[in-house]
Length: 202
Image 1 (cartoon, rainbow, N blue to C red):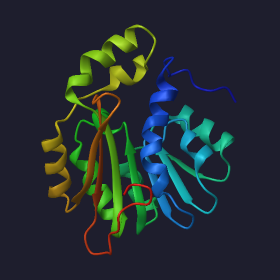
Image 2 (image 1 turned 180 degrees about the vertical axis):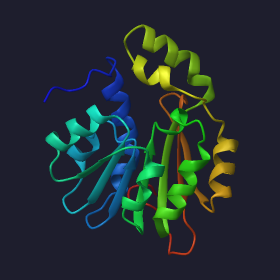
Image 3 (image 1 turned 120 degrees about the horizontal axis):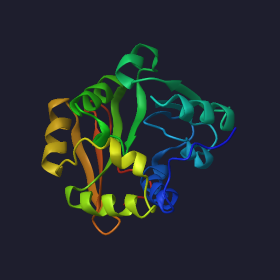
């Protein structure tokens, strides 16, 4: 099956930088939900024993993932509508480069809060507001995905992201910038478990 053509020349490299921030925490035996899994490249780097479910509303993406990664589970549709089918008590929910595509980003945080077990973590990456013009330029030059750029709703400030997580009952755990500060990365935790510092992040 051919790969859907939705990437710019630097898209895979940028995606890899996002993946590097979550992979140290994804250990064998964990249940992981990836909202907006796209072409599923994260599956290539998962350790054996991770129970992975990818979700995306693009049928072509899901068809590609199912053919390419038979060891993982993939569901087509909006994550809100799919919630009854999703495993409860997840250890990790990933939302990498997803928040900026949602007209109501609060729905993602509430879904994550409902699906995570106590002590489970939500991982969020999203462009910083200052990155908007650079992403537009990169898309015009073919360096970044013009398809993704056209779907952007809004680029949220960190305070807004923290507020949305807090309203859903999720506590801040870690926050950083990467790619020259143009991307934001957050880890939020669902209270009630025994949080520890993620492996490799001391």
